[in-house]
Image 1 (cartoon, rainbow, N blue to C red):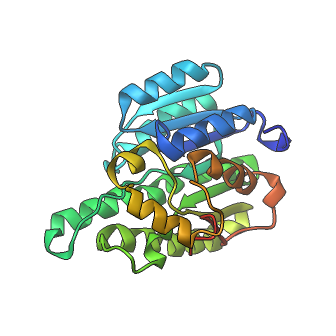
Image 2 (image 1 turned 90 degrees about the vertical axis):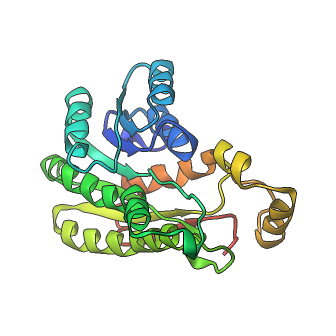
Length: 248
């Protein structure tokens, strides 16, 4: 992790950091020497991870769908970490659904869960980055919208919109030396994915399609995230990086 010296001591905000990919990112940025503040709805797992890592880590339990409370939760973390130079918009939830199961309320909730908070978290921290002379924002997408394999249209539509949000933010914030990129994972085998969606048949099909013939794990997202957050990618913005083992 020490190959990114500019991350040492930098304050990093990660949403959805208590489990899965988010947990791997919290651990990776902490290992790189950053001061990490993370948000998650899962109070128990978040508190456990924060206590384990100890120094340079702060946790706030928050429901990111509550956009009025989100800036306040970020303010509480900022008071512990200092102004944020990096934002990783990781939080999401990929519940499956069919066209007949979607109501207007469910559709709005899926967008609140998967994209709305990405914009408002960026809005809450970009002035920090201006004050620091620049910064990096990572918006997490999904390969799901690139495939016609499954349905769950509300999730796929929200995740496809992350690419547009990334490019819009990159254009507006670029003059302030704030870079915005989209990091798109493939099927990452978190505990939740294994418990809820993985079957012998779906894994066999995945292995037929991936170029890399192994399960991708949350830690596979750490290196790309560190790179995009660091000055090693200082000339990259408005870009989309896919990390899926060659699936799509």
